[in-house]
Image (cartoon, rainbow, N blue to C red; front, side):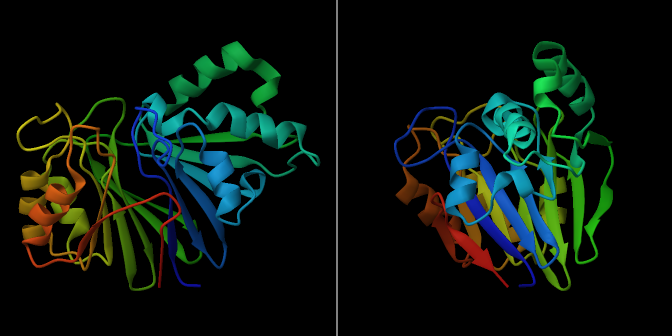
Length: 254
């Protein structure tokens, strides 16, 4: 395995019987990392073949509940086991992540300490690109997103392979730079052209981005109920780049 990317949640904060809130899983030969994690992510992680208590770490595109609400039950599961986790659990996210975690700890206390290990919080800049080596074969690269709550675009690179996740964002030249020539762009499409959602993308804006960045393929996700998936996919696919509507437990690998 060089790089594997699994969709754990392709939906939004609106309850849906088929699609959970945002969550993804990145795997290489050196481990597995949770990306975001709204409610229900832990169960789908198990369905994808990874025990979330054994994750190598977590990365958060931003701090809204539909992207990070499962952090509390994840840490609790690591504590109670059995067996409880012995290793530290590192997480990365934009500036403000430490404040969010401190608020959770003030409420839950010892119950969200990951076993005998420690929760290690690493903040990334919101105004400049950054790069972190997560493992010998995996790099995380970020750029600022056009959203709130510490939002970042995320790129996962292993060898010559790159997967980019937009996170939540409005139109963004930073995302176009990060996604240029990527193997896969996983892109939110919360609004329609007729009814866009503030701070989010919509089909024609994604098509413009894709025409500039030319990733090898595009998976659309995070569509609110008023968005017609067929129209969204068709709009982006006019760029000539293969495009589909992602589903929970879809898996890409290289």
